[in-house]
Image 1 (cartoon, rainbow, N blue to C red):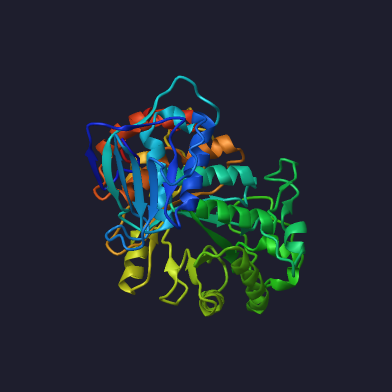
Image 2 (cartoon, rainbow, N blue to C red; image 1 turned 120 degrees about the vertical axis):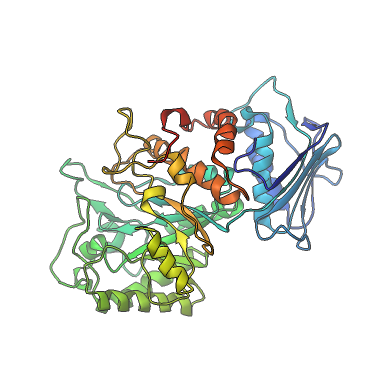
Length: 467
């Protein structure tokens, strides 16, 4: 009962029990995956799982393996031991998560567990994802999220083989990434005096080291981190720091409310934008960089020119721009969020598409219309079934869920809004033949794993029908 559902599973009659005498054997290139396995299993099992040449658990990186692609893996468990093989380090990392799920649910605890046999069932698994982009956007602007919260989301994404963490780092209400050439972006733009009249200052920024640490943490787990720098609209925090960059030079404070501000960068700010993006490229090695690009009140020709020139800057440095709206360059990725017609038009143009329709991927909307729901974005409901049935026209790269945080300030509230809906996205994008009833059956067992991680993911509190 693995989530997401593997491509092929064959049961064997006998499995293998990990114990104090179990060791790990690695081939060149598989060392990081072995360290990941040991670090994930040791807190609950207490097993040292040392590395030696006679290990019963083999972890092998073999670029010549065929049919597994960039993320697939092959896992065999029998009475003699465990063999995990993949053509890439990412594939091995995904296989490690499957091993975790094959063990008793207590293996996911963060503290030592006694009197449990750490037995893996006998299986042959060959597993590859259906779609290459399986993402989650976390808004750390409207309410700042400390590094441990983001790291925990990376862990939960990796457990479910989601592979793109999209960090929304700048907006009207705050600026979270340091840019040494422009220090006021964080010292001024990183803080607002209050939120919707509550009288309480709010803010926070990451250091470069913290962001690089998140990138490395994700890479070890098969999760790449894509940064987003909003432009030319949603720029009020930056303009609070440097008003001369705006379409009007008047000083504006960091915005203290929600909605769409009429503040925006002028075309003369493109030099500043290039300097910011150059800093972003040094911190984030991912090939994709998100430019935002939506909900801007500039004239369409100015808006389009701004995005095209920012995108060309990225392309000239070997990166691929991503935006919520078309940038005018077919090499950029578009994330249609309004409706499916946006996706159809982009696909007809030959443009790469990642689906992000608000009616099935916006997790700031409540999970149900029940009175037990915590605060969320009003006006709509997105159920777990809605997420599972996200439209995926032929030719798309995949999809991602969005968690905007206007109404969400705590880790507990974030996780309530994210799960189980984010797991539904993981299953429908990874599984070769996604099927709702099978997913709900597997979730009944998977809920015991989530309980060990203190993740609120009970499907019974939602309607099983689409909203």
